Length: 246
Image (cartoon, rainbow, N blue to C red; front, side, top):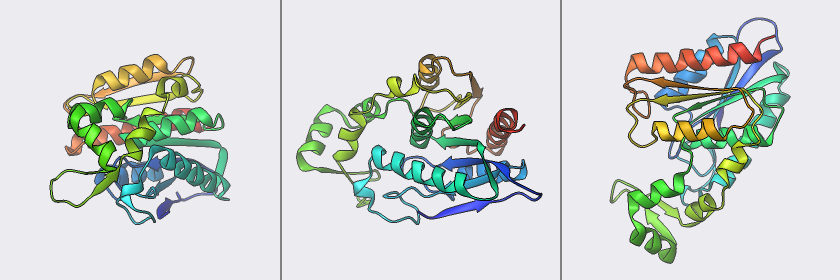
């Protein structure tokens, strides 16, 4: 996996945050880089990684992408981060965007040593969204052929049906119910793909974890407006300052 590790000035060890991009994303997308930079300026070690089988610089073929593999990648990246001498492993958190938000939540739920969590427009259950987007006939054809071409048509970007089958095997609600880490759920108010219903479902399923929903009014899925992105950066850094610092 390719990654960017940002280490703040001053004597460590420092609290640290792993930053995970979304579906068809990479570590150098504007909103991912901005969040990683904001965390570093706020005194955290931040690690942004390109998950394998995605569109960044890491190894693998996009056609082979599955959430299970992304969970393995997140686990590996978290192990690397927590083992760094600059990092206080007891003060380590995770944030993720969109599908990367789902990966971040499940990783934190499975690893109780994760001390804080922030999701950024995180999808709760992606399989039904794919079914609505493609239609039942297209999903059936996808599974029969074994691959489907991602938008835009003619892109040549193929994805195997193992991605869909892997999604349908996830018990998202059951995973989230095991979450212990304090959890801030950031949601764009004008996000048409991942909606406030996704945020509500995370909040309801998170069990006894401390949780808070922060809706950024008017924000789209990737916070393309500078003011919206600034709010997201401030909300993310604020939550980790509250829960990872002594």
